[in-house]
Length: 109
Image (cartoon, rainbow, N blue to C red; front, side):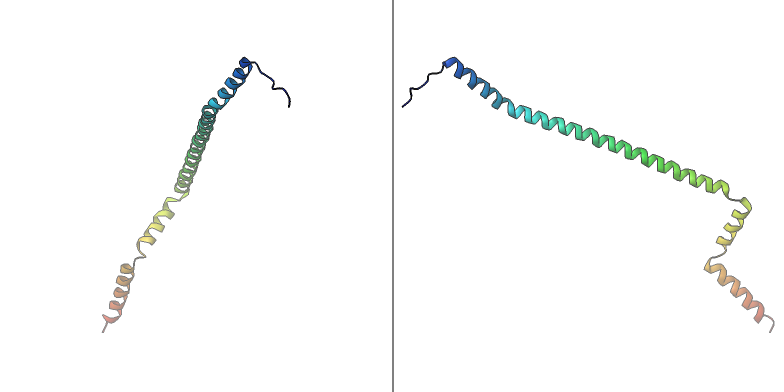
């Protein structure tokens, strides 16, 4: 059998300490990496939220602009006539007009 080789105890102690250091630091490094990834993801989340708000504001401004353009493009006389027609299209107004016509025909007898 081969003769056992003796290693200086200081060498084994140094190797053991470096292994313990790596194993001891692993959880701290892992959790710090996790925290860094979460912070990065949260930053992207807020960037996307700001971008969505900016797009909603642009859409709202475009909608208001279109509404104002429609208001200013209407002719006031045509608008008044259209409003009058809309106001006279009710069922009650139609029935009243029909009753007036029927009374006019039957009133001559």
